[in-house]
Amino acid sequence: DGGITQSPKYLFRKEGQNVTLSCEQNLNHDAMYWYRQDPGQGLRLIYYSQIVNDFQKGDIAEGYSVSREKKESFPLTVTSAQKNPTAFYLCASSNPGSAQYFGPGTRLTVL
Amino acid sequence: EDQVTQSPEALRLQEGESSSLNCSYTVSGLRGLFWYRQDPGKGPEFLFTLYSAGEEKEKERLKATLTKKESFLHITAPKPEDSATYLCAVQELNAGGTSYGKLTFGQGTILTVHP
Image 1 (cartoon, rainbow over the protein chains, first blue to last red):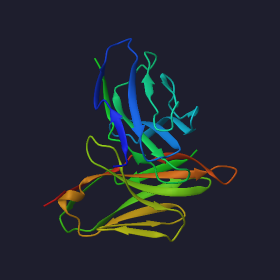
Image 2 (cartoon, each protein chain N blue to C red):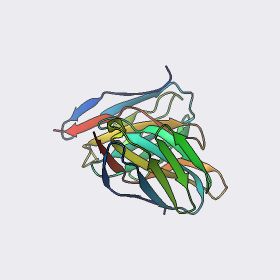
Image 3 (tube, helix red, strand yellow):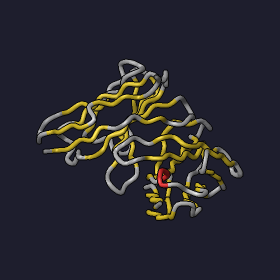
């Protein structure tokens, strides 16, 4: 089955820790995206990548980092510089100009 | 800056009671408008893409329409399983007439259908 997988489903972070969220797709899509969703708010773009080894900041990139070493993978690191990381994180992929397809999400909670 | 506003924020319907959700947008050049359905604790599920004013798309009890300033998601004779948050997003054309793929989302409409 083609699709997008995210892991873990739930993640807990202590103060000062960096954590990495995984995103893998087997849809052969060129572009991948990371969004953050907070209660009562729309999705906000963190980072996106249109091709391997290239990525751009979205609207709320501060405190986050990404890499795109393989077409299938686009991991997101939430660093200790992100002061309010508790949120639902969504990964998506698409081909240029087409609809984005989303993974099941990772819920991150700061302890 | 692109803006997307959805209304109402929440909508409660009785089973079989048809209604519409609104998505108003401001964008310098529209590449596409997208509708998604999101169930609690899950990722959004793609429903429709609309590209030009006058276009309509249908899927089961859902029908999406597009004008130059807004889109409507019409729900005909809804069932309890249609209960979800419906998200609207726009994709802008860049100066070169292509698209980066970036979506700007509205805040969503929470639909509850009672049996």
